[in-house]
Image 1 (spheres, rainbow, N blue to C red):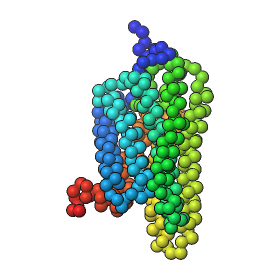
Image 2: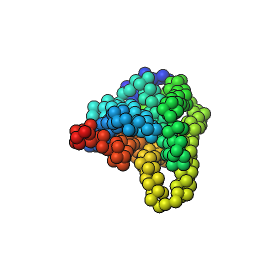
Image 3: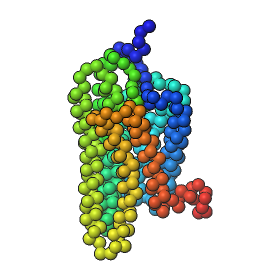
Image 4: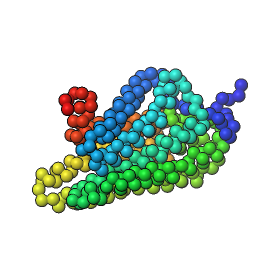
Length: 313
């Protein structure tokens, strides 16, 4: 019998391996995965509804937060249904076009999230350092242009990836050692020299998440400089507290992403650990973002209670 893992240079389907070594506990693993996914869907959908229906929340920060919530819905929904099919039904096959579309959406929308966080950092900078011109600088037109620019950047930088991946010869195996179609996991299957593609992946990563993170850090240095010049301790604490939610979601977003990226390109991490961390990156930020902002923002919290009929209008 021919080896089922052998394939032609252009396979019609790939096989998602899942989490190697943990197959016996897929049923248990699926419980937190499914629960977090449902919470992500509910939380981000509710957050979008709150921001849309509450006129007092039609401010720059909440517009960017709505963009982030929509991105979270796209990322989690792109990956999680197939992951749950692997856990529940052992359905590992995925068509090559579906696989490439999944890879493009996950990576491109992740870069959009990174830039939305940078836009939120810029919003905090303007609000603290130039409060009198905050709404004059970040008008609805400017916010729309920023949102469109973020989407276009993600599509242009990551758009070539599916076409490049489809041109690669996969003549050794069609088994992807992952729970979803991750770019580097696909590159590693190719039986040709992929040094240029790996280098371009590093460059794109730097031009997106890496550069965004550097600019976010610089914005917060300027914010801290401005806050330290405020006359009273109360004013300094109040100004910094407005940034706390944003700092929390940045930590939740960048920490697993950095670990996943470094382990893929430079590290020697056990496969099941790497895959679990990559799935945490797909699961936890979309769940935590609406929780963090919902709990720490009074306007969102009050409107949420009203929508859920826990509080009278």
